Image 1 (spheres, helix red, strand yellow):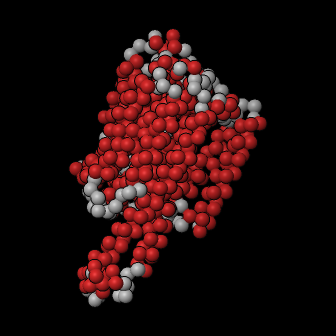
Image 2: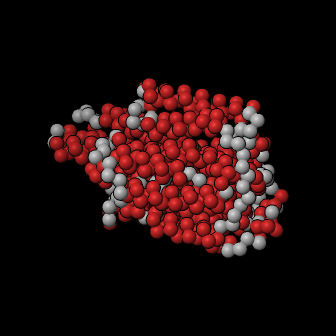
Image 3: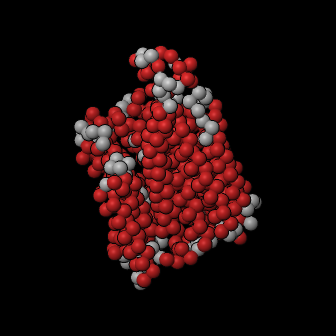
Length: 498
């Protein structure tokens, strides 16, 4: 493999082209979030229905991601990548021109369908064109795009929405996509096609499971989770789909996913790890912007600037670990990264409404360093002992599990945040009464019934209740991080990394 990889011409230009496409696609997982309020009036939507702009993209991308392996074998990796870029860009422009909510949802569905293969194929290409001894540096480059994209997405989306309008959140993909397509068309090597029978039953079961799981996670917060019959239907369908799919691939002659993939211990362990990383990466990104806006009163651009050092920390650690992974046991780097991530979350449990931005920046840099230390060696070790013919299926599965982890993480922390704010508010409000001597001393006007003082006091109670709820979420994420550390000892150090 090394001999072939070293002969690939224009390796640097190929890397730039496929990373442009990857960053373009990954940005769209978060860039549209801050633009949703601006879309409501233009699309004739309500606050409840506008969330389908996000849900439609997530569900369609999740369903189509496992198709990457079969499609690339059937039509060729290069051809599938080029079609994915063109389709994604055209769908993005259509989203920017949407005239109603149904049209926007339809175009976002198409965007997810075409964008699903971009990240898995970019990872496959980087593994194919680089020799095994350079795999760590290749995965550092890929990981930088995957992890920094969601971090800068809300900032870029906020700036485009404020400076121009929400349609530019989608139009921005046009110049990036053109450059990515031209570079990929010019330099990507052609791959050998390996036609195989399409397992419709296997894909149908997996699509049912993934689609209903994503719908359950996205809709749960709106319909009060398992108090709604809708969520129970999604849950039963998701469990049934996964159960039938697992049974099917173990018994079918030519299953949709070859079960031999899961015989590789490193890859299977890495799937558990990347699930945890998905929870940590996007859950913290989902919590921090509303916290900075709600409690600290930061505008969108300031929020982006405060969170930017997190991306800087990730970039620094990835530049370093891309070289370190060749000489240091990757398992040690993974453990060090998880410990740094846990340290940053522990620091975040000390956040208070009275602090300045320094603790947020400091903890963000630490967390960025930690996640970078985990992501690169994990991505390297996951595929180091896997047969090359399984790469397209494996990278799509890797991306799928990361995205499912992100969806579950965001749903869990959002649910706990909403619930704990209500509980904390009730407990704090119970202590506010005319007979409380502390209240009499701090705010005699409020005790006297002054409307302005009572309003100010209510604002303080709301801020404290929310801050305690955010801190509870940070504690939970810290314990999840620490609980993942023992998984590192299940990984085997590949010979190529020694």
